[in-house]
Image (cartoon, rainbow over all chains, first blue to last red; front, top):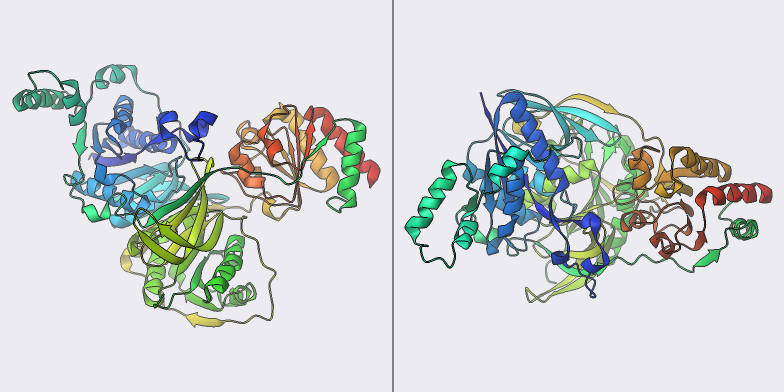
Length: 298
Length: 340
């Protein structure tokens, strides 16, 4: 028996390496100045899926929602061993909070149809909310296991996984299909050189059209032929608009998002009065004296 | 507003009948919000055999405790809790629901919000009541919950507002809201609620469970000595322990020191560790990434020791010592011992 595993991933700005240039004078983030990367814990989710593929046999489908160039994380997934990819991209998805995002992903999962497991990274480093996984599980009426470290066993009826809890761990068993969110507990494999050579040519329809834009042979028949060729070689990245995903446009993007951002400020954490202390014995003695005098110490 | 607004609810997290600190912090904060709105502070308390601890919730400020007890609530799994909360919310229509941003709160909150189709803001570090003028949606909202949280890896602070119908739901980081002093004379009303559990809610089985108390409770420590990568080695990190021992403090660390394997994660302060606000925080060899500062900037007094005069940690410090930590720490120990 072979399993079908969907992994939902996100392309994120590299918030761990925010430099001065990434902050605009008004305190908002200049996303364009930050490199876009594969969300780290989504790589852990993909790794777990690929391990399950190695252990039990599975088809791994990777999906993402994002702008057209988020196809890059899907190619990254193909380099590592994913079998199929799907990109949800549409202006109608823009500005989505976690509720609207989980709704859009639920449409994508329904479109894919039959699956045994959905894996997501626990959280994305741009928002750190950890909400989309559980919300997606609810939308699809699936049981959820959060904070998964590893899968102990998988059979056609159930999955058993070890997951982190505060100060320890649990081993939980869930019937299939189920959704799991995965934490940073495995070492994601690097892209395989041979797969990289092969799949760097993988394209979405938008990319195919852009490649042939301006050429005078861009008739529908030619594009159709190219598309069939790419499909045959498994180099086709499925692209779905909101309508194609069967989404209700009232529930996607900004429109489908109950939460609104009122204000954004850059972090300025300021102490009160600042006093410089010399690193000498006298300096440190006087500091100690002050701390003991005001009952902070002693 | 013509419609009567609902009350402020707090989901009370417990383990074996012991109420989590974060829940009491949220009752304290919830009471402040409720007072401002002129509504009640109410707790949702779910588990089994909990009645003996209900009075604690009154002491911290709850006017009502909705208590739902059932053996199927133990050990904790998400689905039975989620259905019970959803059913209570539909019946009573609270204005606000606060969850701790703990493992439990962060897997339960989204499940509940998704069912109710309401907004949820994760990991808040502050909550306020204010009006909101939505310029894009061209609508004005009165007395909304301002949900304030770090985003973009802690580099920005965003204020989020839930513009759909109530409840306004948030999870809140442990350790950031001040705990009220309990008032033993404060009494409330107990409302027993039937557990709402469908057969499909109990499909997840807990096969095994291992949980130990944390090594230390940094959030309760009045004095914290924290070491960072600037110490240079595990050997040198022992200086932190020496200083902590000498002045009666607890040992903490930056993420870099934890990642280097000098001390375990229970001691980590910052965005991915704990948030602390002790009387005195001594940061030794910690450069002070925004993530670290977010976890300790509220400390009453901060001493920073670093050989780099431009280290960001000095921006939140009250006392700055520019020098080699490895020579400054022994001097601190000596000076303290000489004074006391």
